[in-house]
Every structure is written in C-alpha cells, then in structure tokens.
Image (cartoon, rainbow, N blue to C red; front, side, top):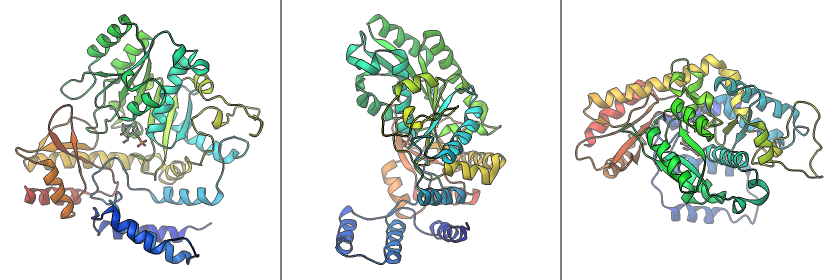
Length: 452
Ligand SMILES: Cc1ncc(COP(=O)(O)O)c(C=O)c1O
C-alpha cells in the first residue's frame, strides 16, 4: 500500500505549522458557540467538509506542539513513519488483549520492547508492555511492587496489612504518584518526600533516614522512585546509589524515565542513566523523546511472575491461553482491550534504523547545549543542571508570567513557568522537536532580549 498522500499532507502541514503561530488566543465560549452553530448531528455532513473544518480548528485553536519553536512539556514533533503507523492501526483495528487474536501485532510489540529491554540492561526474562503513557506505566509499577511486597494485597487489599506501606520520592518526581497513591488505596499520605541536594537530586542520606524512622514508627516502606529526567528540570537522581540502597533494604526500585529514558540508546548520553539496569521496573514513554504520536508509554519489569500475579484474569469469553512462550497482555498488564500502540515505535525505528534514532536524540541534546550557551551569552542565568535538553532560566527582576505572556503574544516561542524546589518561578524551555535548528534558537534568544 502506498502512503504517498499522507507523506505529502504531512510535509505540507509541517511547513505551514513552522511558518504559522504557535500559541492560540481563544475562549472556551468561542469554541462552544462555533461547535453548537455547526454540529447538532441531526443530519449527515460531507466528510471532506468536516475534515477540513476539524483541521482548521486544530490549526487555529491549539498550541502547535510540533512547531520548531515549541520548547514545551515533552510533547514531540512526530516522525512520518509513526504517523503512517497510526493510520495503519486504525484501518486494521487489531485487538491485542489476547495473543491469539493478533499474533502479528503482539509479536511486533514484543520484538520492539525486547530491543529496548536490552538497551536498559534488563535480563531477557523481563516483561514489558506498551501503555497509554507514563502515568499508566507508573501505576503498573506501584501495583506490581505492592503485589510482590505484600502477598495479601491482591486478595484482601491494603486493609489486611499489619502496617501501612510507604513510597519514597522527591518533590521533583512526577505528580502521577500522588494520584496513584490515591487510586491504589495507599492514600496520598503514603508518599514520603525525600530531600534533594542543591542540584535537585535525591539525597540518599535523607532517604535512608526516613526509611529507618518509618520502620521504627511501624510503617512498611516498600518502594523508592528515582526519576531519570524530572519534568520540571530534567534532573537525574543518583540511580546507582538508590539501586544499592534498595537492594540492601529489600525495597522495590522504580525508575521513572518517562522522558529521559530515550537517552539510553545514545552512546554519548547513556552513561548518565547508569544504575537504571539495576531497577526493578522502568517507565519510558515513546510519545516523548522517541517522537511518536500520543499515546505510547512503556512499562519494563524485571519480575514477570509478580506482573502476572498482579494482573491475572480468567474468563470463559476470552480466547483460550495459547501454548508456547507467549503471554496474553490482558493477563499481565493494566489494560484489557488493547490498541496496537507499539507499531508507531516499530515503524519509526525500522525506517530510521537505530543510527538514525541515535542521531535524532543526540541532535536534540546538542540543541539543548546550544540553547543553554546562547542564553548565558545573552545574560540569562541558567538555574538547573542536567545533560538533557531542558533549560530553566531567569534574570534579575524577571516577572515570569508577564514575560511569557509577551513571548506568546509575539509568537516568539512556547515555553512555560516552573518552580524548582521552593524557589521563585523561572522559565522552562525544553527541546522537544527534532526540527528545532540552531538558527531557531538564536532567533528566539535574540527576540527574548527585546522583551526584557
Ligand atoms: C517524569 C514523568 N513521569 C511521568 C509522566 C506522565 O506521563 P504521561 O503524561 O505520558 O502519562 C511525565 C509527563 O510529563 C513525566 O515527565
């Protein structure tokens, strides 16, 4: 099948987005009135007209995350192969819940995940599955960790445990864990916030102290979350120290590498993730630095038996278990019906090849360095420390919210405001598009100088 039309539409869209506005100005009422005036669903409309209208809405009323000057929240530009993959998946609509229904799709996902499992240094017996995103992967980690640590949890729930379980992470870890603590019945107070050093990395001394105190007070510590590329500042926690501590204390070590995990395939960057190979589980999103469309997260787990126990399910209406070395994803992961999420990573990887992917990731890391240096030269103060392409910065007397408003109004770039630790708000700029060039960066920094 030829996908020439998608190719040319994608190329045209890319050019139009790059030369158009990045930030919309629209009110909810404007959009609601527009939709109400056109779509009451009482009669059919010409599909071509509706498609053109939807595209117009997306072009006008959206922060353009695939714009080369979108320096945003880990939402990437997307590769052509991954766009085509999405179309193929929608056309065939494979159901991946059970292996027998979709042998080809299940094996394509497995093949892709085995490749990345090896890059992370996990053993070949580790289990991995695609998720909707990092939140689901983190949820999977907590459920499997609870199941392994507390054999009664699955049948009797937390109420049967003799001590309340606790999780350890820093204030820079992703806020999904607060929701997960709520959803799993642990309760938000099960989260212990570990102190950080001046670079916002987890302080292993404070971790040890809190675990000891909690044990003395009758709690049941069971899990530590290290982040490899924090959302606000791209910080990588001291993974080797955390891994050693967790092993010595029999604690589950989860690494949330939702964004930063992609660096593992780069010979130049992977050293920064050393220690991740000793994790019990890893979150890594394909829809972040691997540059495929949402939704595509991944969950890697060293303990397949614990995952199978956590998500076991038996019914008469699903296809029977297939003999051989295969598993049915609905019995070893959160989801039941399962979309063919992994094709977009598989197709992009097959198309670019590993060297092409490495080049794309290293190029973005280099653009992060260019941005950092360019900001410093222009008199900005960079306030975060990371080898990843995420730069937080400020300057004396800057009112961040006002600065960003002017940045958006003049369509210079999209950046965001963030607070690191308990410091004042600063500006956060992340290279998320493989299309961002040095001249984009130089232009943005020059224009920013005119705003302050
Ligand atoms: C470190 C980290 N973990 C988890 C998540 C949640 O991932 P998702 O939005 O894919 O659910 C994010 C999102 O930005 C993240 O940065």
